[in-house]
Length: 402
Image (tube, rainbow, N blue to C red; front, side, top):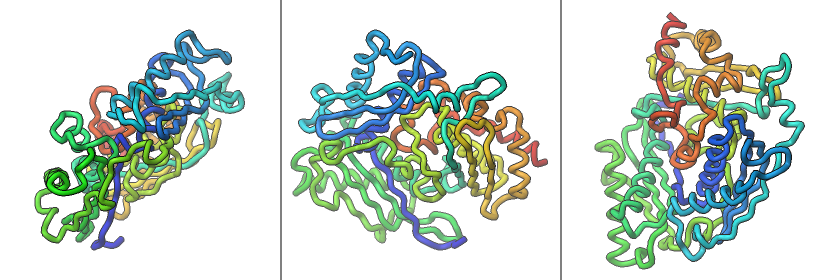
């Protein structure tokens, strides 16, 4: 593996049109899991100028059963959509939570999918789809995340917090960041380039107001990055198009699931191709990606490696994973095959079946909207939220390879 190189990752804010779609889809997931922890949800959202459209397949007690909507369910779904857009901060002519047009095309789950997933007789609950899922962790940051994506997320989180608190009233919801870091001896040591494009109020694209916006962004970036990373050699690209007043779904249509690299590791690790948002945790695209991150993070936190990639594979309707692969990229203190056997032998993981994953991590809860912006990984595990970020498997792993 190369030891000296440049690497870049990007993030997008909660106001980016694709992230608006992700948050709406996960707000619907949360609403249904709150009513029925065994709900089946595959909710896709499309956002455009003054329009939000839902489509997908569901099965949920108290919402949609036997082909019928429960009383008040349609109105509740629409209100959740509008509230989500409001919370993000869209009150613009081209996208306003109160006046946008809403369409709901959700319908019942396919019986053929349901028969493969549901437990029956001697058959354990199966995976909701086939696929491969990857998890990753490294020791580049306290969050055990690749540094470029971790810092990219944190820059945009700060912009959003300042926008909502009134500390930066010239900001609007849509923004993107991109951080390029120089690595030496395999570790990040300096920032060579930063790109921040943020939607702004009228007039902040020229003169003193533009200078104010630029100075503010530079201050945020310098504060977020480690001391000494920003220098006179850092290249800055702040709103490089010159003006960014029209943004969000008014500037570009948004779809659920289009930001899977932003959601994961910023390109520093493989991705199996499946999106997370809008899916209940029987979908291994979501739950297996969470458990692989959990396993990789605990391996690094245990000091068993400084870099770890894990892959799982599933077949639709089949409960047990088809394969488990661990790669510590030459940084492991024990053999990778020994880590694979250790993971298989930890009983509390439930054999890494879909139900075992959900039970161990507690995924059948309304915890997902928080994950739908600023990355699913590298977050703070608190209460029921982000349980895949806990490091409570460290002792089990150490004992298993001792």
